[in-house]
Length: 137
Image 1: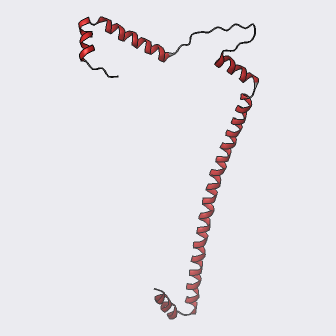
Image 2: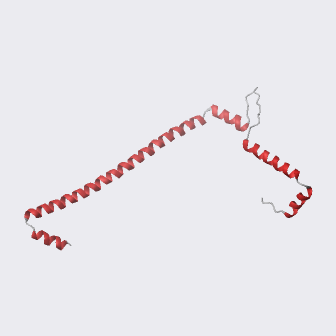
Image 3: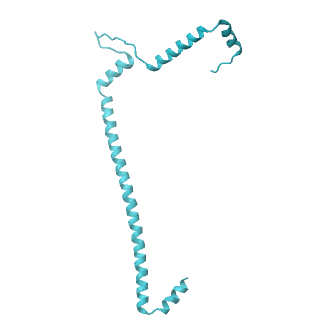
């Protein structure tokens, strides 16, 4: 291939040789410029993602610092002592109110319904199920 290029260049006169060499030189410069531009583009993209990560980490850092400050206050300590350990101030009355737990209430209703269905069965059927029917656990 190189021999063909050299043979072609020998046949051409000086002006066409110069134009050919100049065009090859320009193409090489353009190729290297395109590579540099692409690298610059990828580096800028990486910088943007790093800046976005830094901003989110800074916001997270501020949030964590504010939580640390809150957790070190006396108000938080008192709140935890009251809620978790049942502490109370001198002369203070604490009333325990029942909590409304929907999951627990649903389970209680299901258990009551199951018990009512079992109570309606005949005694002989209960014995038969006890001895011969395998129940899934």
